[in-house]
Image (tube, rainbow, N blue to C red; front, side):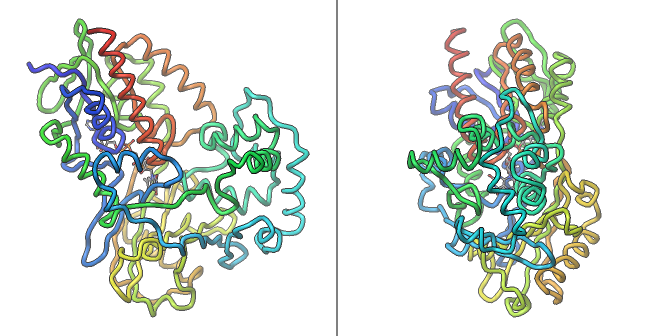
Length: 459
Ligand SMILES: Cc1cc2nc3c(=O)[nH]c(=O)nc-3n(C[C@H](O)[C@H](O)[C@H](O)COP(=O)(O)OP(=O)(O)OC[C@H]3O[C@@H](n4cnc5c(N)ncnc54)[C@H](O)[C@@H]3O)c2cc1C
């Protein structure tokens, strides 16, 4: 049986980037197993007629260096496709209307998004005492304490649903929004923190979002996956499912649907529940922790229209989010062909609506026909679109996005404890320390460094 220095299970961005960095670290005896016929996991671009449609992520933010550096290392720079300037316009559907999210603090105070009392309550944030450092609050607890109910319901609830498919009553502030948590802990509050960062010249983003420009590739995010797959060549075996693992002397023996594989070190870059199933026979307590990490289902409904059918509210900008209190079915909608104009041919528009999440998990799992009907009904209310779509695509992610619920950071500490007893075993995916593509890439770089250190220590 052939033996490898490192075997990686999972060919999403986390597994592929780990393999890339292992090669960069000079470790070439590697193998990557992927259960699906194609690589990419949640990152998959579909080419339908003349439309470029993403099943999952549509890009990464350029305010962190990780993905951009990876792109440079792969020689893909000339394929980068930054979002159009129009993308700075983002909307929230509230009180029966699409309202722009203001771009500056003065504009925010003039905007009708919050009532005068809601705005006054936000300003009071300055005087609210910070939570004790060990507190692990939900976003709802944090926001009610610091910012007021109105800001929670109108701004934060749609944001956590739109970005993480999350439910503010369940997600942990410190695990899901570590930057906000650190601002409170370090400076005593968000206003105080932002003023201090401004003074230090380190302020990023603003009231409209996290800062940084959304960036993709001319032919969609699959271009990054293809480049990583090409670099690995025959070191990737698709349609190979890891089933279980056991320790054999200094090695791990991985059982797969194509027979056993021997590895000196093993990186499980599958979702947490996948890693839990593989580890269950060898490490039941660790597997239990992993299997408990919840995932929210999310469905992406892509609809194409003729431009003239969207004139009542032309989709020019990033798109919109819908707060839970509005009582609609969709979490929000991305105006993909405004963000990246080549996603639709001339005279046509491409929209992608998100349904479900931890807010309404049952909706994400409805039939594709029901999903399309639901989305069309909401788009008629929100954007006055009544024409039938030219094209419809539905992508259902049954276990779409891991949820960092309260207790997540304590869980990670217990997981690290169990891993300490399994030298050479590593876990790396979006289930642990960040969901965005930049987080996945930087965590992969760190995992490859730790694998190299482990192999060097046992050489
Ligand atoms: C709808 C949606 C929109 C998103 N939008 C954005 C966005 O715009 N920007 C952003 O930064 N992030 C976005 N994200 C998040 C981002 O896409 C993910 O965090 C990231 O792609 C996860 O990568 P991963 O490699 O950790 O996991 P995955 O992509 O889930 O990859 C895991 C891989 O492991 C394989 N696998 C599982 N079990 C086994 C096994 N036993 N044996 C072998 N292989 C196995 C799977 O087939 C899969 O290919 C979005 C996510 C979703 C769902």
